[in-house]
Length: 365
Image (tube, rainbow, N blue to C red):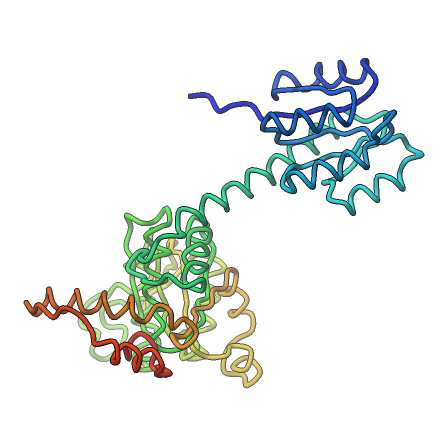
């Protein structure tokens, strides 16, 4: 099915100008014209108009007054003012009243068309965001994440926007807030969803084994290396690599990771020839990275490579409205896993759990 053409209303008291608008716009857009501000307002009341091209100087009701009425009726209706060169002050006033932009007569047709596309792109993005909010508004679960509070709904929307890009992501949040779940959600919603998701906890790897874990090693490259081992980057090739507790990464490994992010090339420990990998890196930390940089514990250039897209996970104490929902979810899970039939929680227990501060966040719950 062909998408309907965007509807544009051209308002000008001169018949020649109305005909000009029709001739340059009607192939791509649905064009309606009006000869006065009052007629324009009536048309907008009766029809769905995406964009209004509004002349400033018209007899009777001028463009400024018409703009006020349009915006009072529907603040989302976009308006481009059309002015004579001597009406610049009025055009600026119109923009303060909510007009998107203005053009001066005689206008360049190509410039007008570019401006129209810019406006329509903005309208499309606004509609897309509204649809996204509506579709997620009632969601309490999203890729194994659970929440109905505004903080979690905002998080779901952010994941939806971030996932389709291929940029590196840095997730910041306290321990137990669900950083790996968020990383998995980003992967599931990305174009790499059918490729591997590999996780590595940087705080759990001894420093002398870190490079081997991340980049792999060749047989005989060090004592105990009895066979070739593939590193996490190779295992994640084509997919996503989640580096948890990135702030615990040793300085020497930070330098190698930076080169990988710059070149998409890795080299196994004991290997002589670098080779290319295609991996999206999602990193997470519970540290204040700016402080780690100031204390020379983390490379500033690596931080900016990782921090292309940043996400913050709220602690449980800041989204207590989700606690009852989480309790229900955990109860259902453990009833199923342990073959129990516990029906629920005493209201006093729920109140006590809700009032508790949860320093360990969802993991503690």
